[in-house]
Amino acid sequence: MRGVAGQPPLDPATIARLGAALVRHIRAEHAASGDHPQQIRIAVGRDTRESGVWMEESLAQGIGSEGGRLTSLGVIPTPGVAYLTSSGPFDLGIVISASHNPFEDNGIKVFSGKGEKFGEAEERGVEAIVADASWTVAPGRASIERSHLVDDYIAHTCKLMTTAGRLRGSRIAIDMGHGATTATAPVILRGLGFDVVEIGNAPDGRNINLDCGSTHPELLARTVVDQQCRLGIAFDGDGDRAIFVDHRGEVVTGDAVMLICGARLKDMNALPGDTIVATVMSNLGLELALKKRGIRLVRTAVGDKYVMEEMLKHGYAIGGEQSGHIICAEHLFTGDGVATALLVLRAMEESGRELADLAAELTMLPQVLVNVRVKARTDVKTVPEIASEIARVESAMAGEGRLLIRYSGTEPLLRIMIEGKDDATIRGWAGEIASAVRVALA
Image 1 (cartoon, helix red, strand yellow):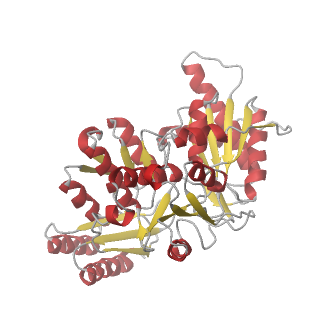
Image 2 (cartoon, rainbow, N blue to C red; image 1 turned 60 degrees about the horizontal axis):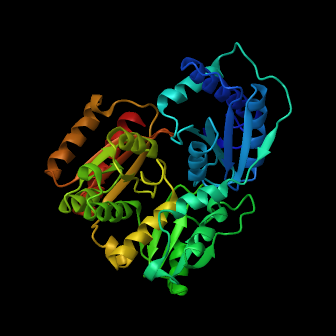
Image 3 (cartoon, helix red, strand yellow; image 1 turned 90 degrees about the horizontal axis):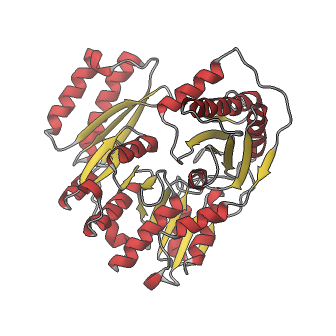
């Protein structure tokens, strides 16, 4: 769930009902397996948005109305909730965050007791309980148990890189976006021996992601160059992704990070199936670079939960998204920005190479994305005017490009993405398909 905090479905009554429904859902799952726990325990963490406090209280009211128990982890990155849910005495984990969105928004993510994001089947089950008009949330006072388990998550994350080694003392800039990583990233990186320059480190409840963080790396790039840092790392509001800046101030995306991490494991003979998992949005250049190293790229639908599902299904070790969500099975089956930073630093440490050098192995093909607002989600293959344009473009590519057309999951938009060798050519193709869509569907 994601939207404007205070407005449906993120109003207090609906949030309380969701909390109650989650307890009912978990209790039913236990009953189906013959287990009848005395109490359902749910861990809740949040980012720094001011609305997170009352949303947590609303969840607690609903959870308590069904006899459940809410443990507040306070301000903590999303992966921290995932880890502590799986390692602690919890049946479920909840994150209150809207990730990279502005402070007015907020959202709710749910993790199973294994620390994995709810799949679509679980989501549909909870939605059905919420929609069932035969029950109401019993009135009562919210009860919240406070916890300081964040230290356990920090200790677990530090296992990915026990020491900075030859990088000890290196100056690193981190932009925490005034978000959840303010509680963890400086502690972890300084503890490993890095000289940390902090920006985006003064959350006030309203400045989360404001011209900073992973979606606005410009300030980080300037800081890296001005402060003569070895590299920079920008996190999003809930800390489940990271974007990097090399020593020259050049941005390094999630595609390059997947190449760096996948290549390292391949060289160690520790890459299951010689495969990494990415979404359909990753650049074709990643696929070509991996192929040179004997690594296969498997693509999923957009969304890190689909990457996670594919990794779990086949036992793959690395996957992620171009936006910086990187999943490392060695650590957690959800994205973790600080863990991703440690993986990159470890690759630098072991290879003796700088980030710019490692990232240079990826040659990004020109990519253009055009969004067209539509009235309805019509299958474009059934619209002759659009289908003919698509066929013409695919024929012109002659196997040396990639065309992806999909509807947005949250907005009435059709997204047209084309990759190819020449920027001007693919922009022309995207414009022609977009024109056909506007005539037929807008």
